[in-house]
Image (cartoon, rainbow, N blue to C red):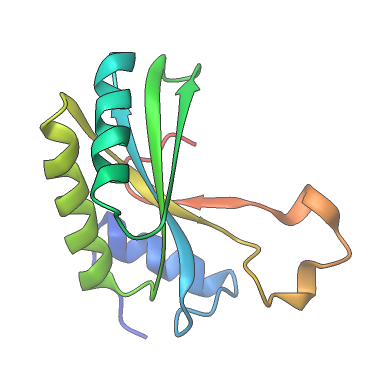
Length: 133
């Protein structure tokens, strides 16, 4: 497989090398961060009203000292699609004084029998560019 020589490409390469099957849809977490809780809540309300694909979750990230909106979308982890979705979500977050903070996937995905006996030890999060998780 060929991977572009940027952060997103290198992330995909690392995922591939760790054994993640990039030919199957995965739950991809896109992270949007906001300094102000009200901005994050407004963004969450807008995403919910739009019936945006995937699931959304709002948390306070103490490490970043920011409000974090996680948008989880089940999709093929294909370079162009990931970049397009990240740009789209960054533009969206900007409307609420927020920004994208990268993307990532949980290593254990549905159908991965290899980790079934290991409980939470193997639920490693692989993050994309700029992700601070």
